[in-house]
Amino acid sequence: MATGQPPAPAVPPGSGWPGDPADAATPVARDPAAVAALAAGASTPEQLDARVSVCRACPRLVAWREEVALTRRAAFADQPYWGRPAPGFGPADARIAVVGLAPAAHGANRTGRIFTGDRSGDWLYAALHRAGLANQPTSVHAADGLRLTDTRIVASVRCAPPANKPTPVERDTCRPWLVRELELLAPTLRVVLVLGAFGWQALWPALTAAGLGAPVVSRPAFAHGAEVRAGRLTVLGCYHVSQQNTFTGRLTEPMLDAVLARARELAG
Ligand code: SF4
Image (cartoon, rainbow, N blue to C red; front, side, top):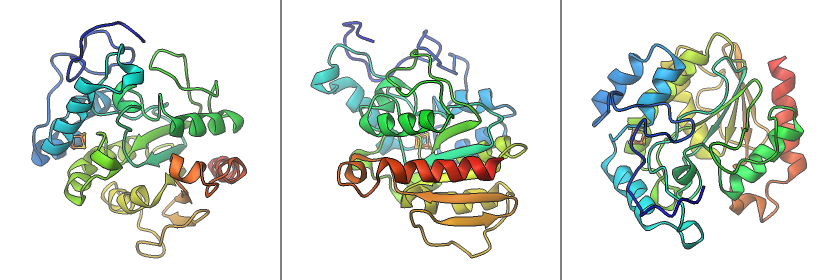
């Protein structure tokens, strides 16, 4: 979406960005206690998405996401950047949750939708489309018409981190948003597909806090193809769709297709 507008640190809530769940009245979390309170008090997925999308509780990540939005990558110099946290994407009554690491600086931090506008997203949404879980194979910008079926994608940390590496404190500060997301999905959720070891480690305490059942093996090790029962859920491990994995052949399309097929099978 080229506009030629001068760079800004973030899109103002409710200013017309496609899919923006927030408005000027959405309460803003500015510290970990406020994240916990606002997450716990979100009574609907829409309210949760709105509150996530304006969160400012991690000073380092807020500074980074806004710095990236101000400086922009040369290829996107004529585009406004979202510059805010990326909320979950997909139906609120999904049976499959896909849990990733965090938004990409020039992907979701630019487009406002998770895994949208970068090579990782190209891989993931093409695979979801092959699996019958997305209506189109591409995910370019927030108004491109993409819809998911029975699948909701969330990040374990909702702001783009420098070098794609959130700190443990940032991961823990963001956890209440993931916990509430899991609680709201609980009535329909059957499968959690985790992309990469960071999301895998972040998931277990969130599952426990959401009351969705401890795993049979405490904190099982991450592996591609791992399958762990956790209460009435099944947690699947998959290598992350990062370019580090897809360019090197560590994760191939057939490998990703097989995990998604298993998720569909388990979800019924
Ligand atoms: S990482 Fe999570 S808790 Fe921290 S500012 Fe972003 S949305 Fe808020």
